[in-house]
Image 1 (cartoon, rainbow, N blue to C red):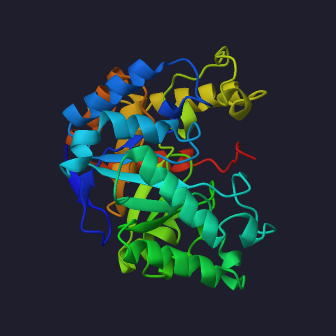
Image 2: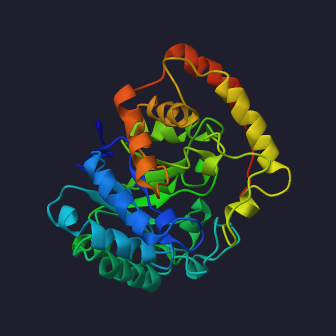
Length: 327
């Protein structure tokens, strides 16, 4: 497993990281806790050193499982764990009409951090992120209080590094806040369909530098080739809404078009999707969601195969797709 620097944090992390939303269990159905725990152990065995979770994932369940399974690895400094503070109003994505006091007031930042420390069994969080953001809040008079709390948590040694998890498909909503030196990482959606980070965020990452954590490399499954028009999700699974109406059929059609590009150099759609992300040097790590050991093993191989050939990258450009199915 190849390693890359995570911005200026001083960490070197595995190119393929572990996205732990799914092992939170609440919104993703069909895999039990036992499989999730096995997936975490398999990830360590495969050389994965970056694990991304959030307080909101299963109301802390994802954090607790990571803290339990990776306890020895965390204490020995073999892994880097990033987590997130949920917006107090529990609304994703952030809307500019929301007041900062309803999203990230200072007391909420402090209490959420304390809860994540408890869940993970850590004395200091490696990377703590604000789970949503909009630059309009920088002009809110309350922001200075929240920022002081963020800086205090770092000074007190409870948070070693801070980052921003950017709104869905909207890197432009966090470009200003990320110029502040306190924020050293940015988590963003980037995949074959959504190339919006290439416009300005990657330029900022090169200038600062900034650690880029890529989420949703598979477009919630659409870029794996596993979503068919006939797919039925387990009861209670949030993807039933994401792929509502004719979206499954559209995802299948576009997936088949991409599959036509596969060859002996790039054999599967998941490999294509991950290696696309890794072809950008601005990217520090890619965190596909993984709930089964088999998925971990499959995803881990993308690092060894490296960036996509230039000809393949050129062929992918027409497949960019401007959409927002979270809305």
